[in-house]
Amino acid sequence: MLTCEKSICTQAIQLKCVESRVENRRLHYGRFVVSPFRRGQASTVGVAMRRALLGEIQGTSITCARLHGIVHEYSTVTGIREATHDVLVNLKEVALRGESNDVKEAISSVTGPKKVTAGDISFPPSVKAVDNLQHIVTITQPISVTIELKIERDCGYRMGNLNEYKNGEFPVDAVFMPVRNVNYSVHLLGSGEATREISLIEIWTNGSPTPDEAISEASEKLIELSSPSLHVKREDVSCSGDDKGLSPSMKLSSQLRDGNKLGKKLSEDTFIDQLELPARAFNCLKEAEIHTITDLLNYSREDLSKIRSFGRKSVDQVSKALWERFDSELPHDEIHLR
Image 1 (cartoon, helix red, strand yellow):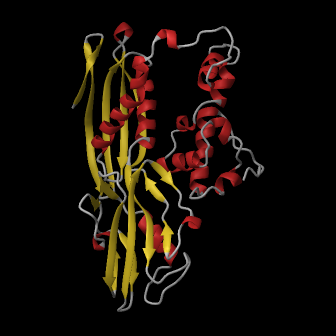
Image 2 (image 1 turned 45 degrees about the vertical axis):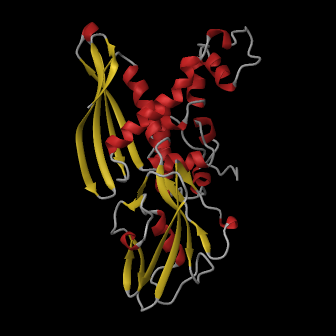
Image 3 (image 1 turned 90 degrees about the vertical axis):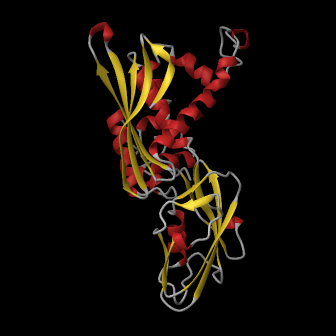
């Protein structure tokens, strides 16, 4: 149990894991209770924690693969059941645990017939596979297959660029997102002036960090991000009567204080994390530089479906979240932003 030293009223804020289970090697679940808060504080913490868990937690992923003797992504090889593209997709899904920020290399050299899994890859000491049984390729004939891999550690989602690779090297869309999904809810405790709030946070990870490791790292990230604000002096902040010299974020804050514009600006300038989308859909939108609800409403369903790795299921999730949370719909006609 993690305990914060600052108190609310007479009680310290406490974080406690109330449920933890391993559904499979690549799906770990944890449920946490954070309490007690004054009214409004639990939602503030929940939003910030969810965004940090989905966007700030580092993960380790395969970013490049060299398949000896193969020159095209859609090549097929006699003796290998899968096409090259399918092998790259399987490598993309390999869940890795690593702590080093340096670029690492790994290799798999196998002679068939054999079903090659993550356990057949020789990783450096600082990297290991979460699930050694994770499938990569099926060799159906007595041939040797060698795959050289590049491994990196980062945040978010990185799409590979085929134009940057040569000599049999293929980019692998890197999923640096060990946290698969996060939900939070706020509940009241007590009554009258003694009413307090508690926040329930649910976390699913791919097993490379456990949920308790993920929430600990997210808390550290939030502290790092907010610590510069502790050293801001009043005289360093401009308080002139006009908007000249203000940053866009400061201008937005000024506009939000205008009661006549409040309802409109909250819907237009709210960041997409308020939609509480699954991690993959959220990061694909960020990769496409869709950061706010305004940005999102410039895309029709057909436009969104053309974003790489953004399937129909993700489009449905976005459409449903927009309607339920902001009473808005995606445009029906294609806008041709790309």
